[in-house]
Image (cartoon, rainbow, N blue to C red; front, side):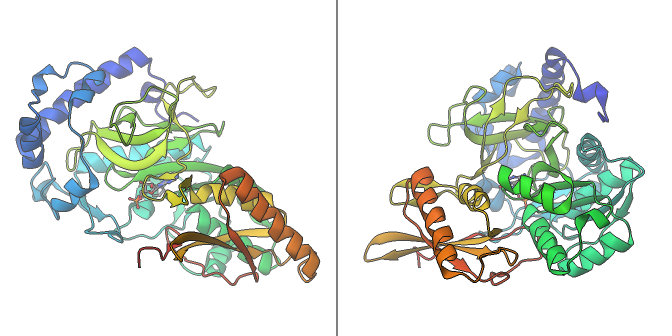
Length: 434
Ligand code: DLL
């Protein structure tokens, strides 16, 4: 269902007009109230009066994660703290956390954005929605909670805990929609199998998964094991949280909520804007946010925009599934590899569970890559050495052919890799720098 026809199916010319009006008022706001932007525009000789179309965005300087880190905690806020009604933050695992603030209007818009994703997934007031994202400074839990309540669904903020507990809730409360990170959905699916429960005996119908990269093969596997339609959604704390973009029932790209966020794709090296269809780094400009507006924010996420319109009737631009971040990209012996590409390969091999870990190391000056992958308990040949060797060789060969790198593949016992009951799972351990 299309929740907000007025914006989601707006003719493109009208959308561009709306975007430029909103962009101009955002530029005035940041120039006046955020000293970082005033200085940055002045240093780059930008006169905001000359920004007359969305294409003129290219004249504006970028904002980077580093800029936001330096503004810790509140220097990027464009309103006084008394107008901020909610604060979230990034996890800060790779540096100083970034603190974001929302005004009442920001919360209203954020709610609309996540409600749209839920409606696009066919969720309505008859659904029981279980949100298994952490409810804390992370935006996933609260962001979806607001949207699901707005839709009128019965919302269970189950947060993150042992998968057994999620399953008990799912069964007893008759959950029809599961919202979590795809890696956590994998944990739930494998626990379901361990408990010998069949997904058909649950009421689950739809899964909305996001917050980390995942592959098309994992979608297929989750759809099968959980007996659901699985949809991808994308967002980031700095821009708003979840609700930036999400798939409709056609599962062919994520519709960006372009009446709130202007999306660009740039070449991360030359920083030039790339044409539709070309892969590069996603850059977002917020055009309705009051508390924490961002101009040309470099996300580090790799994707591309789809030119063709979607069969669902929405006119908003779609972005392709994010394959990874510029900084997750593994450089190994001169080759570029994303963990999600390894996931695709593992899931094609019958007998492996989508629990894997990539260990990078250096021996005698050479990079080495080990891929540890769990085998399924149900794999019939589990205890036959010959079959295990064959499986290992198949994966090793595929990695070499598809990705052009040599990897040592280690098959490990079912349930032996560490499971994280959190928002995101760390797939890569890089020991090369230590
Ligand atoms: O992960 C917000 C969110 C919550 C999105 C719930 C979707 C669902 P952060 O913790 O700030 O915010 O992490 C943002 O996660 O820059 C991407 O690298 C990655 N990411 C988010 N969604 C996807 C996705 C939330 N669908 C960072 N596919 C982003 C791939 C994703 N990567």
